[in-house]
Length: 276
Image 1: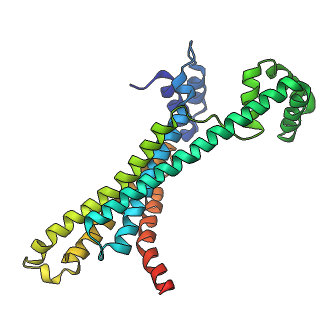
Image 2: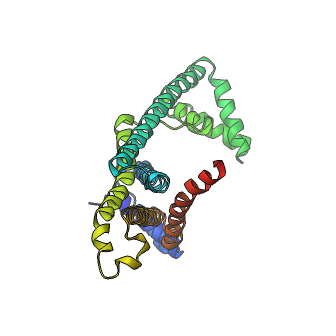
Image 3: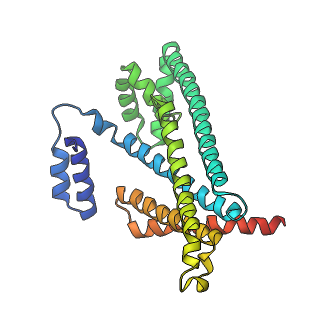
């Protein structure tokens, strides 16, 4: 069930799309008595969703590349094992990257806290200068920073985002990395399984009345076509679906994502020709 906060956010976006000032004012005035954490974190939830879509698209691209480069030379189980290996490697890379970032964030957060305790005036002046650079007049910047710096934890977090452009790491990086690896694995494995199913059905198709006229009726050709078609269709759908969350043109972004599938089909052959 959609929360009141997220419903209000949806209404403000709809008002913007329609350039309806009255509806926008009503949506903004419909504030809640109690602050809802889900509304506060709606951007983080959306970003996590987008990252899962990105991971799935990585897997889809990997499926096309593997099929294009190795589909006629190695067995289907071998292709699937390579896809799962890539997914595991992706998950390990994400885990190590997030572990490093969490350590880096903790160190920088501790440094900013120590500097604020050691020389608060200097830290406040840094933020005043930064906000003057962004367009505030010095008296306004000084007045705002003087107020915010009275709230130590808030001010340190503000310095982390405004000065260092660093955001607090996820509380459960292991689970997120596992989810991303699973998305890559599914994105790569499902199209390859479609290719395997098509290869198994190819002899029956070739034996039909029109089988001899079908270039893709051989097992290898059928597998390649099915993998490419399934992965490219999934790329188009995920690209359009992700764009629709930002109320962008579905068709345009679907076609852009599908074009990546065509590139993944051609690139292994072009690179092979270059190094031959």
